[in-house]
Image (cartoon, rainbow, N blue to C red; front, side, top):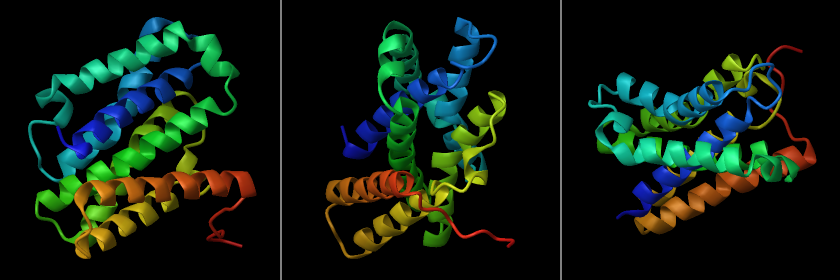
Length: 202
């Protein structure tokens, strides 16, 4: 079992928790609503990537383990709901972990399908962010990529680091781990220090 596959499963699990927790402030918090949001958050970005790259069957259709990871994330959120809410910035932490893993999974898959490195970076960012965008729309939040936070920029940076290390011939698992750490650290530092991308219109 490759590190890439393990990270994809862990990222799916993390995004499922993130999606389920996102409905905590909504008027209707039933099982179906939380589960559907968790499911869309987990597979939304990867589905868009696969459709754009004409890669079929979709990853969550061909691999039942993806569905199992989502279900486990939903169950964990339900069982440990109060505990998770007591953790400071739980949603942020799971979301950050998820985007780091999904960025690299999306970038590598695009490269394996033979696209140019620039397109692979875009696919990595799409994989990481679009599930969260759909989640935010479903929960009546402003999509996070439209806020001032460093979010997609962190994914873009991590994907570029991945390409550089891969080009230099760094061992694959090491490349994955270093690139993921770059995304996670950049995102955490940006939130902690209030970093933001410069405004397009001033």
